[in-house]
Image (cartoon, rainbow, N blue to C red; front, top):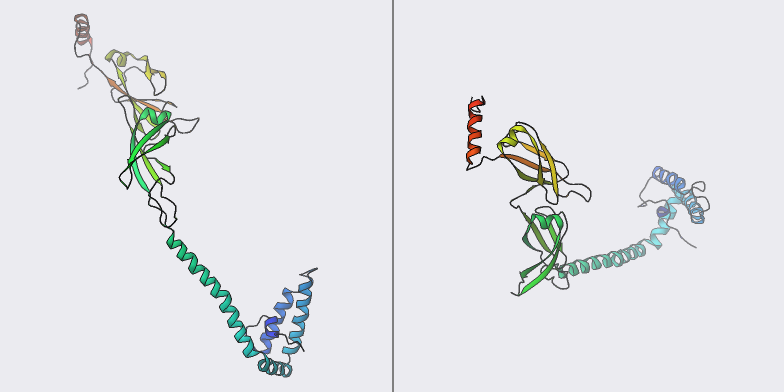
Length: 286
C-alpha cells in the first residue's frame, strides 16, 4: 500500500492541526489547483485528486487519528533522518561554494589606482591633442604614456587609462591611472565654465563716441558695436564664441571694457585735449 503525506499535500507543516485548520488548508489548495484555473495542466489534475483524498481522510477525526498512528509508526523517524540528510547535503554544498567564492575573492585583489595631473594650454584644451607623459613606476623606472586629450575637455576633468595603475595581487586586475587636466589661462583669454573672458581695450574717444571694433576670439575674429559713453568695467557679451559645450554649441565670449589713455601725447594731440578741457563740462567727480 502506498502512503501519502496528506499534511504535505495540503501544505500543512505539522499534523498538530485542528479540523478547522484542515478545512481552511483544503479550501486554499483546492482553489489553487482547481481545473478551471489550470486548464490542460495534467499535474494540476493529479494534484487536485490528492488534495481531495487528503481532505477526505483528515477531515474526519477517527480516520485522521488512524492515519496519524500508522504514519508515525512507519515513516516519522525515517523521514526526519532523510530530511536532515537532504538539507545537510543541499545547504552544505551551498555554504561550501559560498565559502570558496569568498576565499577566491579575498585572494584576487585589484591593484591600487594612481592619480597624477598635467597642465595644458587653453588652445590645446579647445582643439584637443595627443600628449606623452612620463611617470616613475614603483620600481623606480620611467614609463611613458600616450594620452589623448579630447577636444573641449573641462578644467579639472580626469582622463582614465585602464590597467595602468599598480599591479593586482593573486591574479587580480591592475589598477587604473587617472590624469587630472589643469587648463592654463593665457594672456588673451581666461576660462570660466564654458565662457571665455578677454579684455576689450578702447581709446577715450572710441568709448565716448561709440564705434565698431574687431575683436579676436579663440578661433576667429568678430566685429562688435561699442555704444556711446561706455565705461571701463562694463562687459559686452559675444554669444557662441566661448568654449566648447557640445559639438554644436559653445559658451559666450565676455569682453570687459578697459579705456586706455596714452602715456605720451604728441603736440597736436595735447592741443586737442586742451581744447576739450576748455569746452567740456564733464566732471566725473561732481
